[in-house]
Amino acid sequence: MSELIKKTEDLISKIRRLMDKHEKLQESFAETQQEIESLKKSLAEKDERLDKLEREANALRLGQFVELSDSEKKEVRQKINEYLKELDRIIEKISGEG
Image (tube, rainbow, N blue to C red; front, top):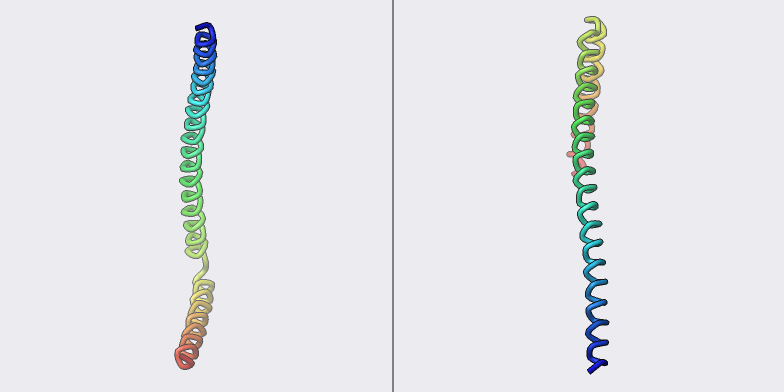
């Protein structure tokens, strides 16, 4: 009978250790979940900031174009037209080969 009591006590002791370990793991898991949520929030904020900065950069580029003199704007338009014509020639060449 004493052997049965000893085995029962050992089993109870193991159960307590497992319960303690389980509780610590649950706490660690909860902390990790909170950290993940915090990192997600931080990432979302940084994405918003990046989008805002990209919009501002685009607005500045557009603003710089608007601030060009008429002759500078004409020069930029001519360059764009040259690029477009070159692209058309390349597309025609590629289409003729296909």
